[in-house]
Image (cartoon, rainbow, N blue to C red; front, side, top):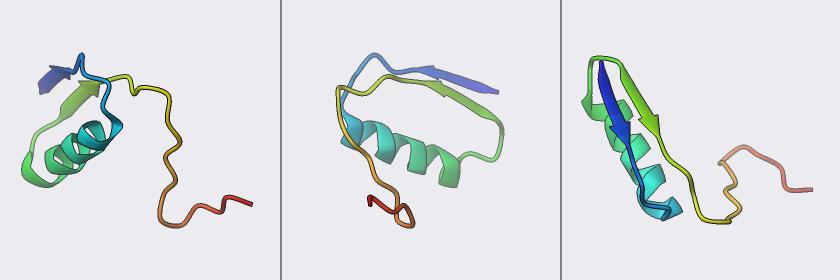
Length: 48
């Protein structure tokens, strides 16, 4: 298992890091992070 503690609060980088880890690592990954205040909306999420 890979454990990653990210002290950075950039939501763009944190989402990109999550995507990269999901695609490139075959073993388990546990990643902790906290984003600066932001609104993140997924592809199939309705904002209304």
